[in-house]
Image (cartoon, rainbow, N blue to C red; front, side, top):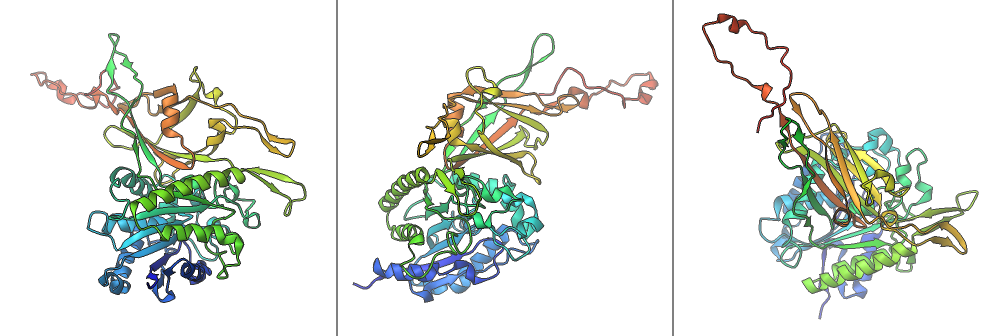
Length: 505
């Protein structure tokens, strides 16, 4: 029986100008595939190239061009009844997800059967906010070209475009994973290549990331939580009665295979998840990467996919335990410990019930039976970043292991970090502005509870939290006056009208 012929399409990440970005991975897969009964003919491997460093090019433009490339270059494959598999790196992941959503999710059987994403920036990158000039100098990203602002805007944490793509995946893709849809996979590292670390930009050494993309951001095992402020009412004294948030349906994305690959970073010839792979099978440093990709390629049925999901989860759990404590001595004068915990990313979006963004607010997290922010453990929040173009959106990067509690971490008999007690209750208070005026808002809260903790925080995931506030419109915004024979009313000056104590329904 002849070997099965597999068509692979490689799609690179952002700021790439050379096909060298793929390294020797295509040839390595070809060689290893033959040993596994798979023919990956180099003539069947299409190395995608797109221009992302022009400011006017946006991510949907690239997915649109990819559709044209599929029509032009893969028509023969599709006409033969075969489907292709796509292997992406970095921004290539969201590019192909946008292409699939736009052109194929609701338009029949997609010509792509497998989407294997290496270090995908599915929820963006913390580095994207640093700006074009600074990112262009960061070696751990991909150096050598000027960044394109259009793609960079998409990649900034909490962007509207990123939110909409991921929300659609969470809410509308339940029946899209499988033989009749696509088989999606996420493979990412969480190791830092210290030789590429940029001391000016500590994000390049961020724990829980590969130096560019966080594991939680790469994963599409996401969920959406809705917190809505109830309609407001007044007491007998004319004061607005504040009410706590009500929680809507919590929607979870379809289960997707997620694999943390051992000792891999985002880029670079030494540790990069794609670029460091050598053609020779004796390259043991990339064996974990190659074997994981081949596992993805060999999936043919829904049962195969579920088995890979379970296997990836078990291996990820073991690798994250093995890599939790990193000891560095080669590049540093003194021995130094790096703790690689598991992290959760939560993106909050604050709007009012009329759909307007609320951009001026304080968001305070609380914990414990007393609903107190001082009861949160030290180091629980590793980062907080507000989106520049969409300031109603703010992204928190939480250390899940610190919040969830963990055993002591030891280097031999030396305790690097003592045991941490779990935080079992989490709360949220929001203080929006303005609180006075003709249009205003009222504070609202979710008191600390185990429910909020469990619904929002999961390791290696991103949760989208929609916060909807009541938009209070004062009745003084529009008043009618009854016209009488007293013509002086026509000359009445109402420039000095002040807000009252009544609001419109």
